Image 1 (cartoon, rainbow, N blue to C red):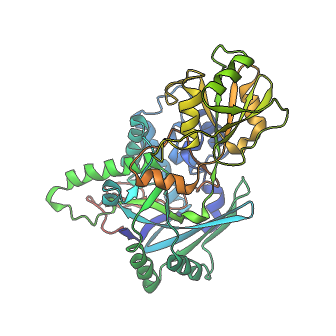
Image 2: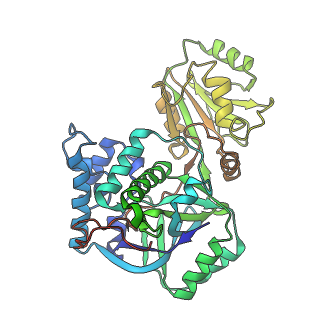
Image 3: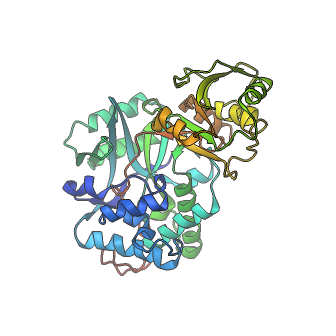
Length: 429
């Protein structure tokens, strides 16, 4: 992989906890607006600038993206964000529930994304890519890291652990109880060691951030075209802001499903249809079903839980063999009539962190909820290696990376961000 250190804006250490925020895409518009109303100087206002307008304002209007630029400039002007002009790698550790994971914040080549070295497994929606591309263009910055995983490497792990012996730059606990710690790696010998080790990492996998990656790649292509003969390939826009974690430290949480109705079936007919679809259906129970392994699922319908088990043959391809795909192909489509889960308004996707009570509440008296065994990192990587796409909403990772800790400038066109009035691309990463 071609991975480089970054220069960036980062918050004053004492402001990092209050300023940084959960990623823009974990909020719907109303929830984002409510959060920003209570935290007006939060970075979420920069990532979701429509929250500073009335609810009926077009969230894709030009003035919304201009507001993102202006808010970012304000945070630079008031000293909340500081410019770190030394190319560095940053180590980013998250600790939650007795577990920890440490990633490396860096710049990954857009060309590696284009040629499949940075591998993807999810379709992107044009409207979401357009939104993030316009945000990058307006602010001149990549504002949220793309979450990547790479296969565990003991030499890289040793480098990371050695660098963590120094004093951290940031160390705070967020509202969700997650502890975030960041170290700055700036010593030239250490920077070169990390850069050299990444050359031995054959590929990385997008865990979260497909839309951010696609948007940054689109902006890069446009800026390359605009640069013409002056384009060198070394400009900052040729790289993606990423946080790379060893896969063995990551845990994928369940991503469950709720269908708003039983498709006109009564309880006996639903059970019969499920059995006809190859599912082994357990007895009614008041106790929630937490799937114990691959091929086992829980179903809440008609006021009771049942365990479902699929023991039949699975497709040969790694995407079609996922439990989420089996559920879709065997149950959601043929039994409940949810043919296209990306478009059907009857289905909703529920992170496992909501628990069985959340599924029961969402299903109510008429709906049907399904709890799934989580997709593994090995399954995610197998799908990506095969160049296939996972079913929608197959993975949910906790804890979430905070946005606003690293804001990476990719353009120095006339801007108020740091008082720079130069035109043209910023050299370096």
